[in-house]
Image (cartoon, rainbow, N blue to C red; front, side, top):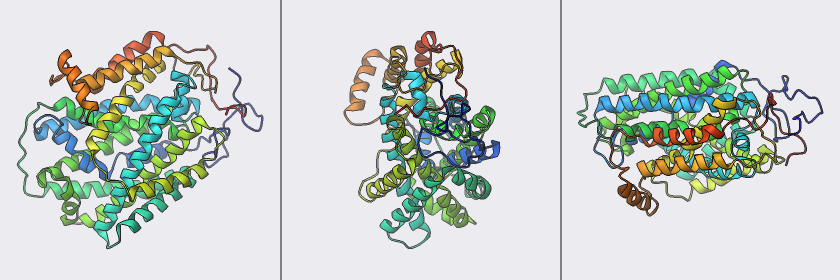
Length: 458
């Protein structure tokens, strides 16, 4: 592999004076985000208006009866910790190599093979961005009288504006929004705890399905994480942002969601109205609606950066404007449904891919991580990914018509379904990691630090 250099010919590749993310993959990314920036950014991402309703996947896992409140809370904590342990190494790898998330897949699968997870990630990011615009618009309409189309358009304009200067947006979120988000969550938790105690009945029967849902929420950020951690000043700050920052706020967010769902008898459509009825609830809810734009921002920006893995010369600013317009148009026309099923399918794809990624991390760290445009295909890693994906579907087929019917039938024959002790997330992750581990050593012996694409790439 050829040496990786700066576009101006200097060998170092780090641009300490830079303040913004480069327009293309042919330029060196600045390392300007410190520990507080990383913790603040990931802490904001751990809170989502979608997460409050998504807590239904925790409280009433698909295919089982409801969980008891202690079981649901335990599943939230266990699933978030497991997910954070999977997310953290991918963030460190992004910081060590300086490569975006989908470019890292070149080192895992090969340059051409990386286009497969890239395509899946583009579809995922676009889907989440549309979800977020609809949710933000709903939140705006809950607070003020504004037409749906105007609310979606406003959310889309703010989202797209943030993507033009992404590192500046992250700093603004850390300085002015993060503390308000923590206060808003505290207001909601105190208000919900002061409500008459809701009667929650259930068992521990669907515990591992609930853990899978919490893990999938965290793992959905693995194919985006390095897009931001590549700008971190150190691997420790990158890891802390994902594990501690994201983990703490996701636990709080899902806890609020479970408490709220218990109050409204598990009707997610009533959650926002419940928040507004709490003391200072309207103010807290307004903060969370404003903050939600960081979710849509991250998805739109990462869609553009993922596309750059295929066409490195394309300007991310042009891409994000086009993607922002597309998400607005889609949000105005599409019927959003099957959120839980979408969540489980994301987990089924990216959890085993993360297992293979961590296997390579354990064997070689960032040494020899080949992110060049001619990185060779690694069939063993593709097999490990596929094996883990099959295991996930056999244990947790989800509920997507026809797709889940096939896996349910196969799982019934193989007796992989209905075991309350068996987690699809842990099983698929372990299988992918173990299959990949013997073949996961670095392809070269030369450490690549920092790794940057060359002008010749693309």
